Amino acid sequence: MVRTMHPLLALRRTARMIRLTAPLSDGLPADEEVLLDAPEPWLAPALVAAGTGVYEDAAKLLATTRERAEWETRDRCVARLAAFADARPEWFAHWQEAAPHDPDMLLVKAELALRRGWASPARADLLRGASPLIAAAAEGDASDPVPWRVALDQARGTNASHTVFENLWEQAVRRSSHHYGCHLAALEYLSAAWYGSHRECFDFAERAAEDALPDSLLQTLPLRAAYMWLTAEEGGTPRGPRAAAVARERLDAAADRALALSARYPQGDPWPAEARNLLVYVLLRLERWTQALQELRRVGPLATSTPWAALSDDPLAQFLDVRDGVRIEVAALTPVGRGRRRDRTG
Image (cartoon, rainbow, N blue to C red):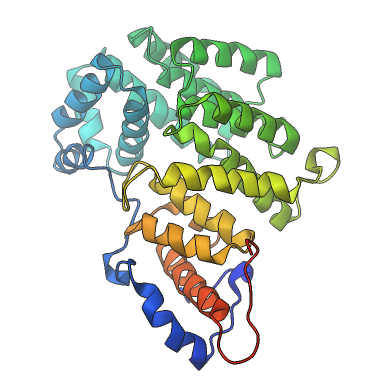
């Protein structure tokens, strides 16, 4: 595929700008060092073992997250393991055969069914058919919120009523009041693209962020709401009262909150990698170029499919193009001769 820039980054590439961008590469890894969706260090060994057909490492990892109540890590592991099982099913088939009642296997099985359902033209029917698997996963550990995150995702895809959604949400927060995955699933249900509105989405996200600890990924929920608004606006949908305008100040506040959260983590940390990639996108849309470059340095070599896969079928190439574009824009802010451009932050 030919690498092309998104319209929001249709940038001038003059010789002067290219010369000025060289110093702006400081702190950015080389293109060949950047990885797309690199697994977290605690998950990589389990994926390597699964690639050879061995499931025990994955089983041990998930059992440990359950025993230690590490629900955020557990949720990420479940999602990545289900994705791997979708692409490489042999190891997971061995796990099902060897331990058909393992609560961790049952949770991956429910997530896998949901993943396949979402990818199918018969989405609603397949997602409804996953209900017994989700129920079995929930019975595996009564304190685990992750099956309820799966149930919330299912509710969105099956046109579940607000009453059903609220009942599931109550079960989720009863188990973990600040679980990021459950909040993100609820945010998507409440978005204008599904069964809510931009106002509901922002209100929910901002309340959750206010109640969360400063280093919690819940601080990035308003950023997610901003991303949903910006991409809906960009695509020309939705229309009508659900697409009511969102004030620029609210978008900037969401970005500012995410910047504060990102600053609390080391550069290149895998935990906030997706949030940082989303933040880069939102900063670009807000024309906050200097901060976008700062955030790209924090991203380091960890590009994520979200949000770049929505812009290109080659998300890694898109991310690298974005880096080049941001450097050019920041170079354009550098005083040379007459005049000076300014970004939206002043």
